Image 1 (cartoon, rainbow, N blue to C red):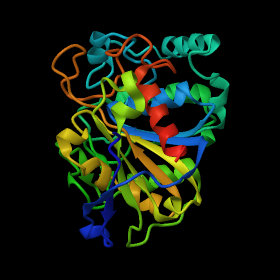
Image 2: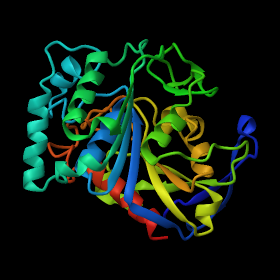
Image 3: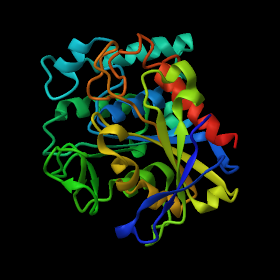
Length: 333
């Protein structure tokens, strides 16, 4: 039986609390699944890029914090560690990575790259981030410059942030790359990225009206969810639950940031829910899990180096398919 639990969000942002109300089915949602936006931190940033590139025919915006170019790891953990995280042993060949993307587009494994010209892209790399080298994030920016008009690209690389999701006042230290990797930076990354991707939005007020639901990833996505956790989450504003037309945003957590590691910190503290609540946006938070056996994933990262197979960055990648299934599940209710 699918786990579909509702949680009430407290009225005040500073005292918001999530408590289970009841087990029930999802409300009937009127979701626009042809204009999806995505975001993510670290491995979640890599995953956001993969989902965007693979599905640019339905993803209209992507925001990445502290990550690198599409197919950076080239299905090789050695390359991933040597070029795509905190060090760059050899220059990243962006043209070669993009050539692979073109081959996949030509074969239909990903959407046509021409579709990217209609996207909005926002990215951030903190100057105090020692977990992801600035050259890695610069390569991501250079890659998107090939595909997306400059007026639709935003790159924030002058802020003194560590390897965290920057917020106004939620999480831990902004200058310490430590769990839950959410930093009190006096900077509203959620608002910045959503406004960049979707245009000028209504500023959030001091109350949340919506609810968080939990979704049984295994029941919904089947074998494609074998490397994912049992439960995903989604924030559903009251207007969306009442049947109003709503957009969907998918946010991918980083390594060591899945729910079993940080509880509900990523779901509750990034600030995405506050903006979503006043702008008819459903936010989906899919979840990974750690694995100490094959496939090895001890930090619960999203697959951006190939632990689920060599199609991980294409439409055929199991994790990308699982996210598709979660979106479809939300949309059909």
